Image (tube, rainbow, N blue to C red; front, side, top):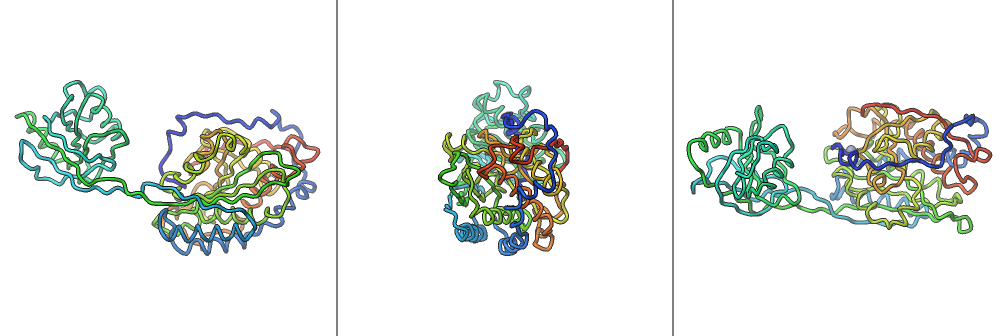
Length: 458
Ligand SMILES: [Zn+2]
């Protein structure tokens, strides 16, 4: 589970609708007896002991993207998939591992600035020499043509760094010196974004206020210089395992089940997300020898915690035809904590889709109807953005150990693993088994259920 809220996804506003369910759930209330028989082929084989053992191996150490810990996890996952007979691929990709700040400096009327100068994350390497002009908080209203060809002195606060830099850049500024906002100490802050190609540096609030005063009294020619800065790239990996459908029954469709294998650096990520990986592996094992009319594709992604980098890479590598053929992506992230809340299915737009329809119906058969809600922040997002029905299965609210050193195996509940494994297994199998064209065929398959939107916080 990635921490930063991805508001951009909501802004994209893509609509996904399931399209295969009848408008009314009708009287297809699940029948315990026959429905269990329908699901037994999968759910009777799902064994939380196996999942627990995977977590034990994976959560021996942190698996931060690009580290040896992640690579060991990747190899373990690949070995497991291969031992079940899957055609397995490791897909490498690059991500921004960090930012090397290099050296930055300011001079004022040819004298070196006495305070500490901090390079903005993402600042370009360059030097600008020009008159210094104070533009307050650099809101659109405050910035005018006066800044053209000059270096902008900006106060931190109220609007994002991105907007501040963009507002002065749009009016022709050649450099940025930003001082800290009210109540903030130090000068370790600031991010410049791609395309904002002027040197950008941060100084303390005291240093900045002195400069504001000085500018009121005299003209200042400033030099801002950033040298030796740049992103450091790391390599992370996705693991993709495929099983072809029965050759005589191939309907051309693909169903995907995913999790992320990387963790944060702070802890071993037993629940986040070794639990999801363990469920993916167990479902792959259970379904390895069951004939299906749909291709099964199991994936574990890297660098989820760095901003969903692995899943964006994988979703971006799909051809349009392949993306069209993927009927659903089930994302399992944090599915085993004894200290978290109940199971919920999140979609980025807060709308139901094919995955939530099947998930809720399977939940009703296995244990309880699963509600849905709205959230991005995991690997379902890039698939959703490609128009693929996708949902995140997670327990909410989150446990207190989230992203900490105590996200360890002793907090894992085998009951929760079992429940999620059975529900997702039953849902995926209902899509993939050869005798079910769709949920609405109630003669062959259990029908849909009514399920509710739950505005539950994480
Ligand atoms: Zn996380």
